[in-house]
Length: 237
Image (cartoon, rainbow, N blue to C red):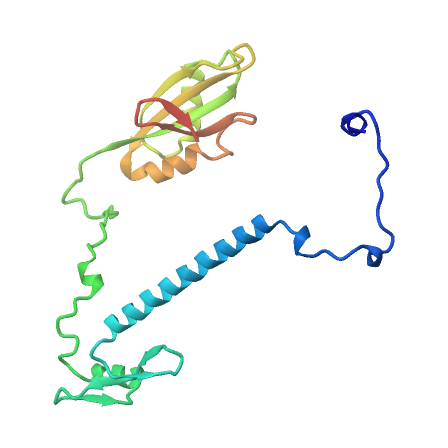
């Protein structure tokens, strides 16, 4: 019988009850008492943890509200009554928080030493944009817009990319254009380039909008921003 039961090729019939009321009742002897004891032990640990947490809350409550008039709720919890101090230093019980705030609002010395967070916050940097005021001149700085261009024809050269950049730049004063040919997975099918367009820092946002516009590049060309990692390697995002 054991060989028949463990043989996977033998399909034994399955049985089920039609009327569950005919089944004998299950008593404590049919229950896994080890599992019941484990659940009971876990329940006891949770009860002890809740008891310890309640004791810590009670201690914190007594530390926070020590020295203030309190009253008992009858369930073992201590509540603090609404109170404030008058001019003589005596506690006047019964005032709400709204009344206390209104009273302090009329006191000129209540918030005398309070410093506003806005005063501590540093001023926002302002960059000049005026073209009429030419009495002083800022230092000319150059920023680079790095672009990853792919899906180009394998015969594409740097001269073709220079003409493409000159066509799309518009009124942007491009200082220099540098190209780096990247290794493609299938060089016989397409080629990829890293194009670095250098222009005035004040025109950086405008340059990014122009050179990352889908309408500026020829149809079918794949364009993404090209970012250099801190370790010197390149990544396209």
